[in-house]
Length: 72
Image (tube, rainbow, N blue to C red):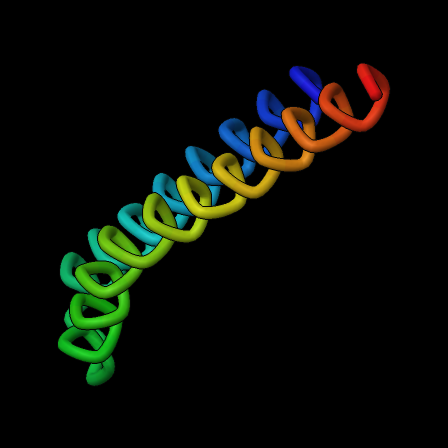
């Protein structure tokens, strides 16, 4: 389970960095979609960590449930 949590964290970091780089590149090259990229980056800055946090909670709850089930 710990390995899955690490993979999810690394994936979240990669996604956020890629979004920020896309936004910066679009701004530098004066792309017409720059504001859309900025909006997506801002939304993802909130949604990706919250989603990863919820997945982490589900993993922890499953682990607790499995441990309680083994104890009975």
